Length: 186
Length: 174
Image (cartoon, rainbow over the protein chains, first blue to last red):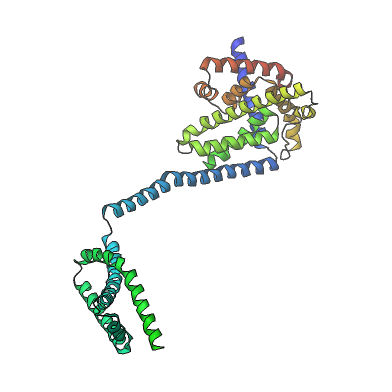
């Protein structure tokens, strides 16, 4: 009987403590309450920012890196030939124009019977005009041919490399002869 | 999650305040516990939030006590005058209760004050077990999980805490 009374006392004592603690929690001052609300908001904001970081770290970075790798892979596997062909064709056209003019000039200069004859021919302004017209016509013809026959581009490019070596020498000879002609005319 | 935190924050604050006897530190501890719960365990089912939150809270309180003991040791070694020790009086740290009526204040103030002092005077483990069991209504198993101890230890801590409180509050209770 005494033990039962003790238990009742104990439970009522615990109940009183609980009520007192509840009261103290429910009657917090307004400053503390507002402070708690602020801190709760901060905690929930931290969750959002943490979630954003997690989203970036776990999804956006892997997906973007995968997409980048795929693009690189596509370019690597499917070699973009159109780019290289385009540039090759363009360079070939330029080289073809130059090389034809240079060859023509070399032929003229190298096949001259004598220096005097050569000088007479070279001093004639009509001849020079005709020569330049011829050269232009030749280059136009060459352009048409190159547009029609793309298959020969590789062979021609090889030839162009060979012709490039002659370019500098022919240009210098042409300049010298021009200077001589001008001197003679003067 | 917001509702859960709103429902629990006042009691968590009081628990931390009783343990630390410092309002600002108690607020910091509660905020840390909230942030940890939100960041790490928000994807858990809501029924697990309560024990998880109190586990975090008790860990934070324990950490605070460890830091304080280290600080106190350093102060004693360096022979600094501990001016703040006066402000750690339990009676002064009790929250203001401006919303209560004077009658209610008169009725409960004495017991409440004595209870706060008695609770603050309990060893930390006993205090935590007592508040979790009695106030938060956690069962022995959950309390043992939160406190990271055995169920028998929970029972022992609780019985000792109750006994000490009864001794200290018997005059006010009777």
